[in-house]
Length: 347
Picture (tube, rainbow, N blue to C red):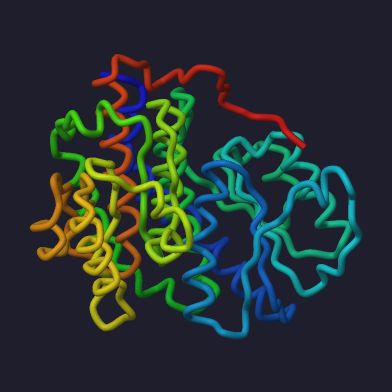
């Protein structure tokens, strides 16, 4: 068994520990946001950590119209050192190691600019964890495979917990049902890879809303572990140019959860997207619990019934299983992608 697969299988324990360990810190962050009159949140991250930030933006802005969430341009802090007024800003550093130079520089600049800071890391002894006002521990333990799996899933979960602490719904999280769904997925065998995906030069990954982060991470993982060229984006944005890439047989991974009952759902959008893809005779790999889409897809990786924000966690695990299986089918080593290191230093 590869290190990557071993680490994916640790997800249940990681999420359970994260929820328990970070509860008091999350409550303290919520109190600070209210006390300081925070008006905006900035996510500072790169790679998988940046992808995780997209669910925070969606969850906060759909539940708290008075708060906006944006993403840092790292060079503003690391290269140009622009002075900005962050007195009403919650600055969220997301970094698995909490030790990369660019991340530390971004955190230090945000503090100098007056921000309230939160570090989301996998090392409570890291520079970022010790420097920030608050620390959310990913609780994932050492991750030996270069490509992030359990740490990315834990980052997504941390963003869910952070959003819930800020919007006042932390107590409503149905953790028991989330864990049951995770265990259901992890008990499945790895998917068999169809030749259309195995031989494809390029792949498209699409989703939106809470699972936009998963589509982006899917794209990154396919590049890292399978050496595929990928377009990853939303089901609407791809109509503004990227759909020109599509032709018969083109593999498209459609991440399409039905969504929680009683909330805004992207279900109809996903169904229309699947119908469009079928008309073009693309090879549809659906990660979904929507029957209409399963009937249109060439391959379906099922999702458990969803509660609350679990759709992003479940879809992430299916993506990780798919990428792992594809990498192995290609004869590659998913634990050590070429040209990559665990901690990346950039400016």
